[in-house]
Length: 102
Image (cartoon, rainbow, N blue to C red; front, side, top):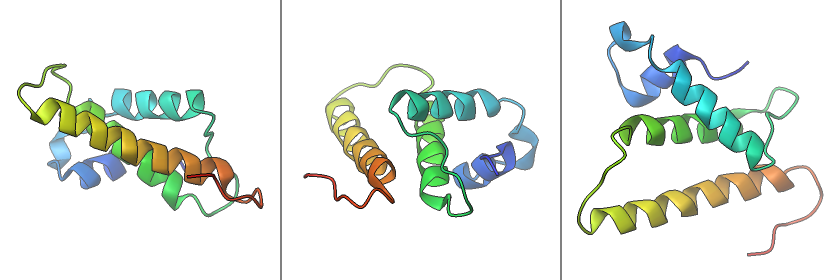
């Protein structure tokens, strides 16, 4: 099961009448994960992948204006990259019998 508009709306705590415009953020998040060599895993245990997709989609949704100002910009970008790297490394090496190097 892929991430749905309803799942993302709940994650973002949006009212139910605001679902139509969310699919583009989900699609962009899936494209990002695929480009990072993290395709949707097979099987039933997809919670970490779904969390990655929802986190990315939420980031795209929250920052859709393409502008941030002040010291928040650098801190937010650094935090976002750290979180994404953690997700991606975890998902890339899951089930490969290897631990990612720090």
